[in-house]
Length: 529
Image (cartoon, rainbow, N blue to C red; front, side):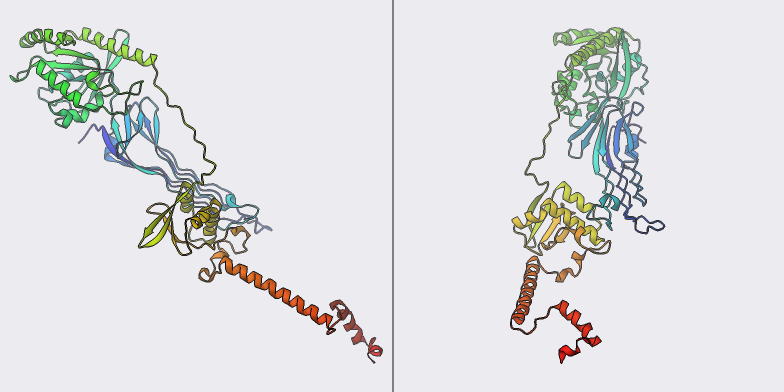
């Protein structure tokens, strides 16, 4: 069973927002007290946070799917839904967050550093929040939106000042055990170290960390052995220490040949851009400060070999130390040399702090509509795809089982200018309109959908604009009908005026109303005679 994991694929998703509530306040002697539906709660976020007590990504290897809690639905009496709890995922210091295509999203270094891997969805508004002077009692509410979902890659890069590199069984684990309190596995067979080990070394007033990386072999940069899998752990180190085995029993190996092979593998390895220096550049591994430690000089053959290769190494510019991880010979001098390099790197970092990219504020352009319409073709028929944050979000918030909610969506789209833009691009009644990408909502566009649902009298939850939608007259037909009514009224007035002038009738309506009761009482009988 694996005990150390430094790379995992994590599937994260934020919580879904709660739906808004549709409710009308009711109490004694006040049956219709107005809308009181509360808003839904927002979904919880998924946050990666550095925790010094976490040293491996093993938990996420066994459980790679993580989901934050959903927001609660709104309730009556203006009660809002409960917001979803934020899911905190602890990660080791030095974790790099990448997308599936390798793009670096975050480099988490330092206790408490965090990154929002998946944001929670927005809660829907209740009908109390949707009410206005014109729409006093909405019979609908907005739905909650699903949280973000993403597949991210977590890679652990150990935070160490010095990295020990060398062939398997060169004595790296023994060296880190002799110089620090770390107790890695030590045995007399190759590839004993299967995971990077960290140790803290104190040299005078300087304290630094060293990393024991699994042994490298020829072809490690191409994936052979364990080296390529763990070379990422030396990318953050300020310096490298070549641990060369001077007491090897293999006749075809010697310290100079081992050093040449390791240097060639370091030169082939491409350092990830996720960790850069103060100038924004990444220093290749083979160009960083290096020390050479000739190990196992406590053996007679090891001492002779070290004395033989030391002049050659010094002529190449290396600082060479003859050490023994078993007898601790030369470890003090090696520790102070490491501390000198670490202190120089820290001074350089303090003198030139990392450059912070200033935020760029780009205000929205005056003529920016907030959406765009892309004309496509499907089955030889025109298709208009509406794209934009607002239209897509509004569609997700709409309850399509509620006519009033659909009318509200139509009003919002019309106010945004979607219908006018469809007219400009040549859309005709009955054309297919899709809001969103592949999984968008499909409509058969009807340009007769007029805005202003709040002005239409209809029961809550319904919209008269959707009644008999197949027989609904167009705008032009409505104008023609109105004009016909005006002409009919004008013709009726003209006919009555002509009759009055011809003497067909002269009495007004008010005089006839007065004369009728007089006749019934007999007061007007003489006049008739």
